[in-house]
Image (cartoon, rainbow, N blue to C red; front, top):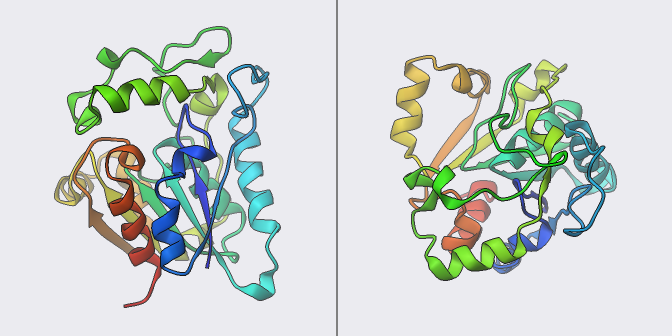
Length: 236
């Protein structure tokens, strides 16, 4: 199956490099995306919007022959929001959305408008701005490697409001791979009807998988993440 891998903030397609082998071993065809403005640290991203990133994913979906079957979208963190909006745009072309340490936003939601912005972009913040849960298993070596590869994200990708239009998105099966917080915690939040879980509650079929680690499992537990994604989309 064709799997479109959508990175979160500060990351390009290469962030999936250590996840890809497990997907290929399972017989899938992974396609890591580098989204607009994320081609290099020197790229001009001043005018890049959330819609530009969504459109890039939709274009990737459309690049596959429908006769070959539906595609799977995998979105990490903010990439999960992008995957959800893309599935809203092409609900008939998406077999499943896998949310890696993320949940889908509802109408009017956003990725994160509280991150420090500099000249229209968001550099990777100091580690002190993250919660302890974010950084589990991200040791000094991994932090240094992450910071060396990090590319500032377009500010509007994080702060633009999500626009949704097709309720058929709720018919697209989903999997949540919970890393930073457990599935038990997510279900607790859903039971409390917290605003950021309301869209997830409307999806008709959702599977939950625990992969305990920090917010960047593609760095801290990449092989396990690849196997979890493959298991999510491969019938037992």
